[in-house]
Image 1 (cartoon, rainbow, N blue to C red):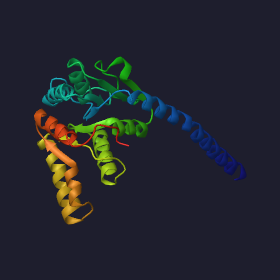
Image 2 (cartoon, one colour):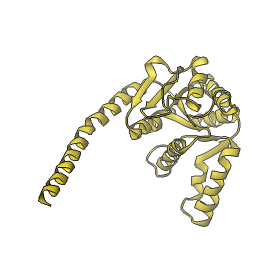
Image 3 (tube, rainbow, N blue to C red):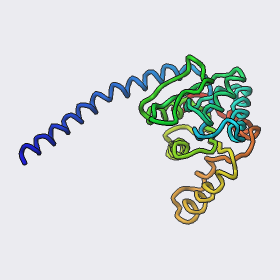
Image 4 (spheres, rainbow, N blue to C red):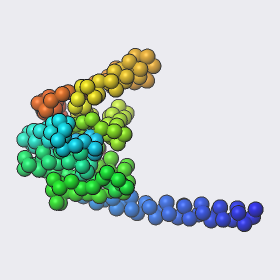
Length: 231
């Protein structure tokens, strides 16, 4: 029993040592990210499924939205991968705008798309570091239909704004058919039935169906507020 306890203790010591050294890797990702992202200027992040096919209407709509974002003076940030991310970078690239990719190393699905500016490709091991870059340097979130990762990024932004940890910025969900069920649940269950959020929290989210509405929301917001990092 003593030998087993000794081995167990040793494994925990090794874990603590590895955790301490991981801090340097985390710091290096923050430093590299801050240095590069501080140079990009005002951008809008586009989120959505990596599994969206290039011939789908959601892909084509995302590309059109990204083009209009660039035409209105913003750059585009995506997660750097395929699907909706590729569509966002493609629309920005073909329109001659800033096209940023924040790639995350995953065992499947994730690889760079070819429409990211060569000097604006960043690699991350840690999701939480990557999410800081999205939130800090985005002037708005445009959220297309997606899966768990898309929901994670959406609710992270909503929570940070709701709690006052960052300044408010536009969060635009594209696709009434996709998003209305979730929003109805938020409104009826979270707000009306359980009072787990306040009525003003509902105003943090916009649901639209076309690219012109996306641009209108962004421009209306920034006609009133300054373009700047969010914290």
